Amino acid sequence: MTAPTGPLTAEAAVPRALTQALAAELVQASNMLADLAYDLGSDQDTLRRHMASLQRIDHVTQMQLAIADLLRVPDDMAANVAHVTLEDMAVRLKGALS
Image 1 (spheres, rainbow, N blue to C red):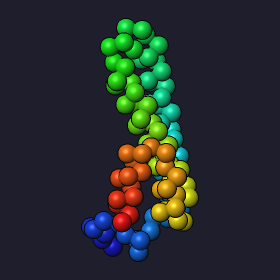
Image 2 (image 1 turned 120 degrees about the horizontal axis):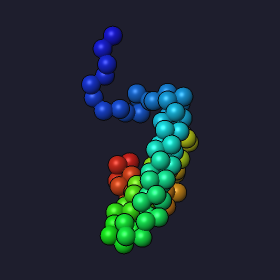
Image 3 (image 1 turned 180 degrees about the horizontal axis):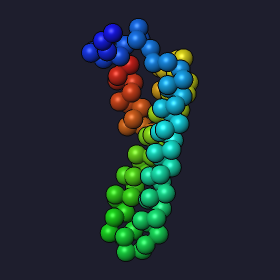
């Protein structure tokens, strides 16, 4: 049996168990990044020099958590995307669905 070579479509749905496992992995990765940002931010010199980078880490963790939420409830993806609170990410996802 050969693996599919094209992009995933609605006809090639990802098994629910896998989406749940992926969501859990994203939450774990987000927690790890948040811990890293906290550790780096606890040093005042690092915080001053790298504030923008630390904020980007926080943005990435928020994106990961939003994706995890979407993976947990895949039934009505368009409706769920409407609840994404990160505006830039919501715009990109809505564009992908249209």
